[in-house]
Length: 117
Image (cartoon, rainbow, N blue to C red; front, side, top):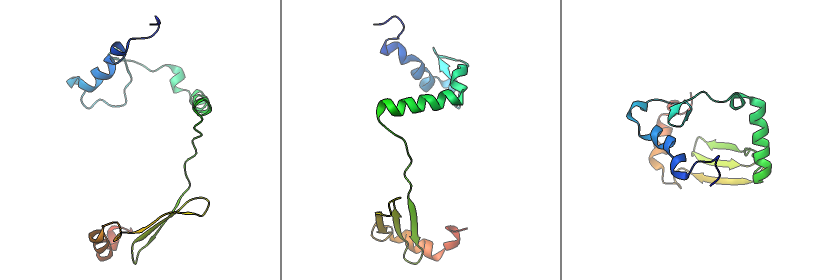
C-alpha cells in the first residue's frame, strides 16, 4: 500500500460517519474529511480548473458529454406522445392508453387547466 493512500476500510470512515451520525441529520452541502467538516481547497472553487478537469476526464474516458437534443410533442386530443431526436428520427411514439394510463388520459382531458397553465 502506498503511504499516501488510505486503506479501503479507513477511506470509508468519513462516508459512514456522515451517513450514520445522528447529529448530522439535516446537514447538507458541507464538505467532510477525516470525519470532520472542512473547508474545500481553493482549487475546488475554481471554475477554470473544473472545466479543465471535466475536459481531461472526457478525453481519458472517451465519454464526450453532449446532452441529447430531443423535441417532445403531445397531442392534447389523444394525449399521444412523440419524441424526435436532433436528426429528425422518431425515438418514441406511444399513446397514454397504449402505456396503460387510461385514467390519466381521462383526468387530463376533464381538467386540462391542471396540466397547461
